[in-house]
Image (cartoon, rainbow, N blue to C red; front, side, top):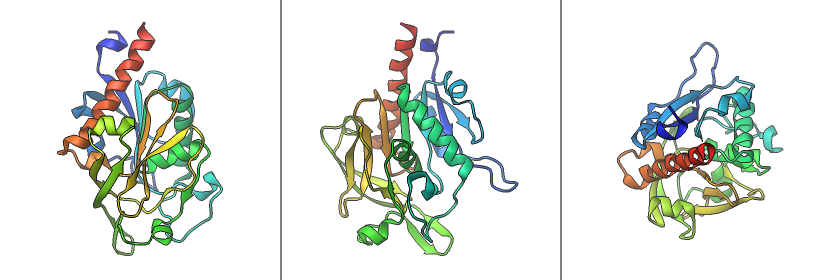
Length: 247
């Protein structure tokens, strides 16, 4: 079977292994990829041969999760930083660099957006409320150690690939983060902001065929066609990649 005649193989990074717990990933990522016509392949941290791992794949999703260690972007420690996993950081940064260098379609979600930015030399805001205040809640913290998603509005640049995907310039999103992009590295452009506080909510690579990062969780809005269109556009981009490989 040729690469072009099968479903796109989409690698999705997983959460790391902590203590004796297994590698894991919320099923919503898998459901979103399948609904868009892709076949999900889970990528747990720890693999070292990035080229061999990604070569059979048609696209890469870097999923959400805990915070990136500040050392990865020469940042400062902060008491709000949690669930740091050095193995996962190293693994995903390698995957991101490969995907960007070799033009593998890549979609970064929440932490995944931040990985793409850090892999390209950018920096992060350690704790959004300290910079932007709390006029918009990007995550609920009802009690110590408990974190919940919340909803808010995002404005998308009309002249962006993301707007073409969503078919709108305003969208209600589900977010679950306390960090955000600070310095945008060369090659990337900001294409969406939180409507009220202007936290950076999405970026696109200026030269890569399809590299987008969103700070929210579109996989948590499975019944909203606006969000599902992003996954559909991503999977369609992987078929274009297949066409180039089989031409």
